[in-house]
Image 1: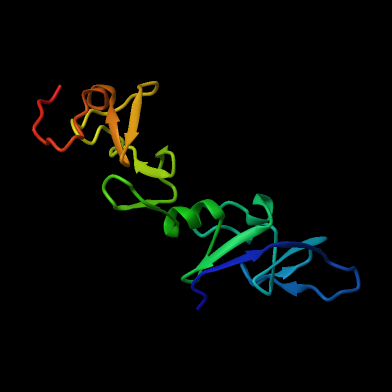
Image 2: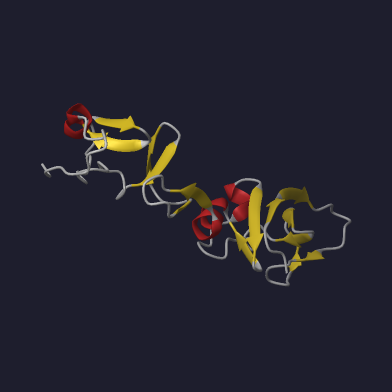
Length: 155
Protein backbone atom coordinates (compact mmCIF):
# COMPACT_ATOMS: atom_id res chain seq x y z
CA UNK A 1 0.00 0.00 0.00
CA UNK A 2 1.37 3.41 -1.00
CA UNK A 3 0.81 6.09 1.62
CA UNK A 4 1.77 9.34 -0.09
CA UNK A 5 3.05 9.60 -3.61
CA UNK A 6 3.01 12.08 -6.47
CA UNK A 7 3.13 10.34 -9.84
CA UNK A 8 3.44 11.46 -13.41
CA UNK A 9 0.98 10.49 -16.14
CA UNK A 10 2.35 9.88 -19.63
CA UNK A 11 0.50 9.53 -22.92
CA UNK A 12 2.02 6.57 -24.80
CA UNK A 13 1.46 5.65 -28.42
CA UNK A 14 0.53 2.00 -29.02
CA UNK A 15 2.61 0.65 -31.90
CA UNK A 16 0.65 -1.19 -34.59
CA UNK A 17 2.67 -4.40 -34.23
CA UNK A 18 2.60 -4.28 -30.45
CA UNK A 19 0.41 -6.74 -28.57
CA UNK A 20 -2.51 -4.93 -26.83
CA UNK A 21 -1.87 -4.32 -23.14
CA UNK A 22 -4.36 -4.81 -20.34
CA UNK A 23 -5.92 -1.74 -18.71
CA UNK A 24 -5.29 -1.42 -14.97
CA UNK A 25 -8.70 0.23 -14.56
CA UNK A 26 -11.13 -2.04 -16.38
CA UNK A 27 -8.89 -5.08 -17.13
CA UNK A 28 -9.90 -4.83 -20.79
CA UNK A 29 -7.45 -4.83 -23.69
CA UNK A 30 -6.20 -1.42 -24.77
CA UNK A 31 -6.69 -1.25 -28.54
CA UNK A 32 -6.77 2.56 -28.76
CA UNK A 33 -4.07 4.46 -30.61
CA UNK A 34 -2.95 6.03 -27.32
CA UNK A 35 -2.92 4.83 -23.74
CA UNK A 36 -1.85 6.34 -20.44
CA UNK A 37 1.05 5.10 -18.39
CA UNK A 38 0.94 5.78 -14.64
CA UNK A 39 1.85 3.92 -11.46
CA UNK A 40 3.90 1.48 -13.58
CA UNK A 41 0.71 0.33 -15.32
CA UNK A 42 -1.24 1.12 -18.51
CA UNK A 43 -4.74 2.62 -18.70
CA UNK A 44 -7.42 3.57 -21.22
CA UNK A 45 -7.69 7.37 -21.27
CA UNK A 46 -11.21 7.09 -19.82
CA UNK A 47 -10.23 4.63 -17.07
CA UNK A 48 -7.62 6.68 -15.21
CA UNK A 49 -9.91 8.77 -13.01
CA UNK A 50 -9.85 10.47 -9.63
CA UNK A 51 -11.46 8.27 -6.98
CA UNK A 52 -13.38 11.27 -5.59
CA UNK A 53 -14.56 13.47 -8.44
CA UNK A 54 -14.18 11.07 -11.41
CA UNK A 55 -12.24 13.64 -13.45
CA UNK A 56 -10.09 12.08 -16.17
CA UNK A 57 -6.53 12.42 -14.91
CA UNK A 58 -4.95 12.21 -18.36
CA UNK A 59 -6.86 15.36 -19.33
CA UNK A 60 -6.19 17.20 -16.06
CA UNK A 61 -2.44 17.42 -16.54
CA UNK A 62 0.50 15.20 -15.98
CA UNK A 63 0.26 14.56 -12.24
CA UNK A 64 -1.81 12.33 -9.99
CA UNK A 65 -1.58 11.54 -6.29
CA UNK A 66 -1.98 8.29 -4.40
CA UNK A 67 -2.69 7.69 -0.75
CA UNK A 68 -4.39 4.83 1.07
CA UNK A 69 -4.91 3.00 -2.25
CA UNK A 70 -6.78 5.99 -3.72
CA UNK A 71 -5.85 7.63 -7.01
CA UNK A 72 -6.61 11.35 -6.76
CA UNK A 73 -6.39 14.60 -8.68
CA UNK A 74 -4.41 17.40 -7.04
CA UNK A 75 -7.51 19.27 -5.85
CA UNK A 76 -9.01 16.26 -4.07
CA UNK A 77 -5.67 15.17 -2.63
CA UNK A 78 -5.23 18.61 -1.04
CA UNK A 79 -8.87 18.69 0.06
CA UNK A 80 -8.56 15.34 1.81
CA UNK A 81 -4.98 15.32 3.06
CA UNK A 82 -3.43 18.75 2.60
CA UNK A 83 -2.64 21.20 5.37
CA UNK A 84 -1.66 24.86 5.01
CA UNK A 85 -0.55 25.34 8.58
CA UNK A 86 -2.04 26.73 11.76
CA UNK A 87 -4.21 29.80 12.31
CA UNK A 88 -2.26 32.63 13.94
CA UNK A 89 -5.27 33.50 16.14
CA UNK A 90 -6.62 30.15 17.38
CA UNK A 91 -3.59 27.91 16.60
CA UNK A 92 -5.87 25.27 15.06
CA UNK A 93 -5.00 23.53 11.79
CA UNK A 94 -6.15 25.12 8.52
CA UNK A 95 -6.97 22.58 5.77
CA UNK A 96 -5.41 23.29 2.38
CA UNK A 97 -8.77 23.77 0.64
CA UNK A 98 -10.13 26.33 3.12
CA UNK A 99 -10.33 30.04 2.30
CA UNK A 100 -8.02 32.09 4.52
CA UNK A 101 -7.05 35.65 5.32
CA UNK A 102 -3.41 36.68 5.39
CA UNK A 103 -1.64 39.53 7.15
CA UNK A 104 2.12 39.64 6.61
CA UNK A 105 3.37 36.12 7.38
CA UNK A 106 0.28 35.15 9.37
CA UNK A 107 -2.59 32.99 8.10
CA UNK A 108 -6.09 33.02 9.66
CA UNK A 109 -9.38 31.15 9.37
CA UNK A 110 -12.00 33.55 8.01
CA UNK A 111 -13.89 33.34 11.32
CA UNK A 112 -10.73 34.15 13.29
CA UNK A 113 -9.85 37.23 11.26
CA UNK A 114 -11.27 39.76 13.75
CA UNK A 115 -10.00 42.30 16.22
CA UNK A 116 -8.40 40.26 18.97
CA UNK A 117 -9.51 42.72 21.65
CA UNK A 118 -13.14 43.51 20.82
CA UNK A 119 -13.83 40.60 18.39
CA UNK A 120 -15.15 42.95 15.68
CA UNK A 121 -15.18 41.08 12.36
CA UNK A 122 -13.67 42.81 9.35
CA UNK A 123 -15.42 43.28 6.03
CA UNK A 124 -13.78 43.75 2.66
CA UNK A 125 -12.12 47.15 2.62
CA UNK A 126 -12.06 47.58 6.41
CA UNK A 127 -8.86 48.95 7.86
CA UNK A 128 -7.07 46.71 10.36
CA UNK A 129 -3.72 46.85 12.10
CA UNK A 130 -1.17 44.26 13.11
CA UNK A 131 0.61 45.15 16.34
CA UNK A 132 2.68 42.71 18.42
CA UNK A 133 1.34 40.00 16.09
CA UNK A 134 -2.27 40.81 17.07
CA UNK A 135 -5.00 41.93 14.65
CA UNK A 136 -6.64 45.14 15.85
CA UNK A 137 -9.48 47.31 14.61
CA UNK A 138 -8.77 50.99 14.13
CA UNK A 139 -10.42 52.02 17.44
CA UNK A 140 -8.35 49.59 19.50
CA UNK A 141 -5.16 50.42 17.64
CA UNK A 142 -5.59 54.17 18.01
CA UNK A 143 -6.87 53.83 21.58
CA UNK A 144 -3.65 52.10 22.61
CA UNK A 145 -5.43 49.28 24.41
CA UNK A 146 -2.28 47.13 24.30
CA UNK A 147 -0.45 49.04 27.02
CA UNK A 148 -1.06 46.34 29.62
CA UNK A 149 -4.63 47.25 30.54
CA UNK A 150 -7.06 44.44 29.76
CA UNK A 151 -10.16 46.27 30.96
CA UNK A 152 -12.01 47.90 28.13
CA UNK A 153 -15.51 48.55 26.98
CA UNK A 154 -16.72 46.77 23.81
CA UNK A 155 -17.70 49.10 20.97
